[in-house]
Image 1 (cartoon, one colour):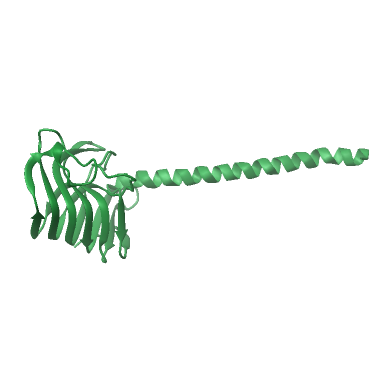
Image 2 (tube, one colour; image 1 turned 120 degrees about the horizontal axis):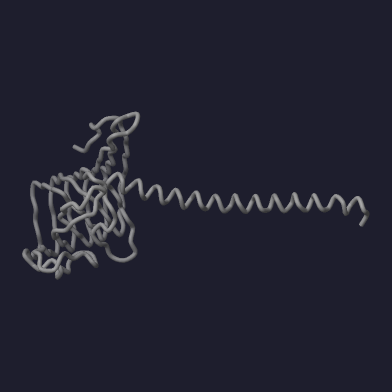
Length: 224
């Protein structure tokens, strides 16, 4: 190798090393940004008050901090198998909130809609977000932490009301209440014209048949 070739090899090698290091940093930063996106998306869902969480085994009442306000839930009908119902509390951004926790092993919800409002934004003041699923939702291991809920009709199958909430067995695995408190356990449920407010929803799986997501300035983008 000539002296000239040896002289040029050093800078070329250094440039090659720098390019390799730069590519590795880009790969690493790309993975970091993806993880950051997932984390931010999850936090945003909690702040909005609605989080649908996929879990590999069973489902339990919300173990995350929910928003300080509820979100609207609305459906033409709901039917399901394996129902439990008991009183509970959820941890919100401004303290614990009372909730009625309803769990279903499997469920079918027709014409499901949910909506919430984000207040005190710096430029728009308020934004209302609505998720409309006209074709309905199928799910399993569903847990809904309810603030209030109304229905035009309700039918329960093989119901036991007043059972110790820690002993309910029909619902998702792990969905039990405070020992010594009253609970409801039923083999099945069907209800029509549901309307209410919820703190949180979790599920093993949720399958939506059609989806219409909209965000509007103001507070009028609601269900119903």
